[in-house]
Length: 319
Ligand code: NAD
Ligand code: UDP
Image 1 (cartoon, helix red, strand yellow):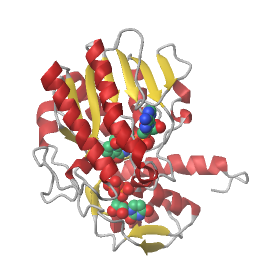
Image 2 (spheres, protein in one colour):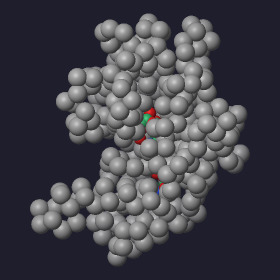
Image 3 (tube, rainbow, N blue to C red):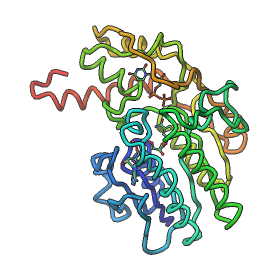
């Protein structure tokens, strides 16, 4: 049985990854300090003898007793609101945290995966973005604590592979959505859904013509597991090329929720990327991976998940 360490395992992506690894028969060690995640996301796994939850800050150190077959480093604040609230913690987990996770993989002879991001492409001048594109990142802007920490993490990962022969892989994750994103994490999809269900104004930043490509979390997890099993170094883009403007996304969520909430325009954050779409030909060719979830169905399922939580949290039962 594979014993797999998942840092950030109590977060949105990490918890879905833990679910999948558990379903595949792994022994999972989930390490999290709950800075942006929650124990609730993995509470359902706690009863299993194959699941361990360790509360620790991986920027301070990462010690795991016994054999380890894989270290998946997913710990990091990930939404612009979160990483701007915790910029130093974000820089530390992308640097010290990545070193600590790499050291663990090196000591244990384990495969290592780094959760990187499409943010390494910055305000991309190439569209869609292939892995060969080096990006266009402002190193001193408001997003740099995240973008540059991830770029540093990629460099550290590539160096450990080159210098120490660690079996590493890098996944560049594009915007992903699904159940368990916090409605206050500030990202467009949980924001729009939360606002629509509460009947509040739906906040579109700028004129809303900027685009993102949105991937359902189950598809992302499938791509990560394939990369884990493949032994490929990457970096590999995992995301759904389904590209949509934020204005159209807000209108779509308005329609799917049947809300009376109105769209309002709010100021656009500095350095907010204009466009984002993954070139996934490498993942298709090398991993046989392609996103499968129809986006409308996935959005609908996600809305239902939020609606159920909101209804349960409202004493009168009115959602
Ligand atoms: P999230 O905030 O829901 O999860 C991150 C988890 O890491 C949280 O549980 C948090 O408590 C934990 N964490 C943060 N710092 C830690 C530390 N020092 N020690 C231990 N635990 C720590 O975010 P997410 O969306 O699930 O993102 C997970 C990973 O995927 C991140 O590395 C992120 O950069 C990457 N990613 C996500 C997306 C996306 O669309 N969700 C896109 C690109 C990259
Ligand atoms: N956005 C928006 N309204 C919101 C939250 C975000 O219009 O309430 C915009 C944001 O400015 C960006 C896009 O939606 O242009 C995606 O933002 P998100 O934080 O989801 O992801 P990221 O910018 O990290 O790709």
